[in-house]
Length: 234
Ligand SMILES: C[S@@+](CC[C@H](N)C(=O)[O-])C[C@H]1O[C@@H](n2cnc3c(N)ncnc32)[C@H](O)[C@@H]1O
Image (cartoon, rainbow, N blue to C red; front, side):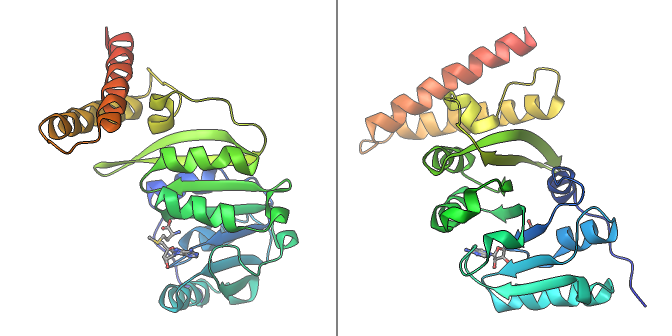
């Protein structure tokens, strides 16, 4: 008999919320496959769902979750790097979550051009969101959703992208997305960013070998973040 699984974490639930009903899904870097299994159990996606990972251990965990949930017949598994060797016609929605922004950008850049024809990407970078966003423009991808979600002490960025032209974003928008004065999670993320930048500025200005360009960038972002804080909080 199928076992009950624990609920999705707020981070994965926010990714799941961006999946459109009836999507044909591939979850790249699936690890435990919690996201695709929950979406299948909720009847939110079409079968079969692809769950892939570059490492065998995580893929084994994914297969076990599918078995526990009684969904082994409704899922396909592949051990591969990113989207390598996978058919763009096999899915219309690609989730790449829980990896660094640069790894996600590398997966998108290495994907065959067929993967950027009408697919919806749900991207959840754990770090370096600005680097990921900068990589979208040359790939002909643009953001369609940009959310912040809090899980415990951490604020995560959860994004959706599709074919399109990315508008120019300010350094602060690259870091945190559009300003959301009414959103306490945005206020929290802004406060943390200011703290991190102040520390970085201190480190850079106290170091003889610091790159002057990095110091100037840090100061500019700090000014933009400070202005935003004043606008939002008076
Ligand atoms: C921290 S887990 C994230 C699992 C799940 N996606 C989540 O968000 O909770 C990252 C997974 O990505 C896999 N991974 C890392 N680089 C990858 C790549 N280039 N292609 C496919 N999977 C990759 C790792 O093996 C690992 O299982």
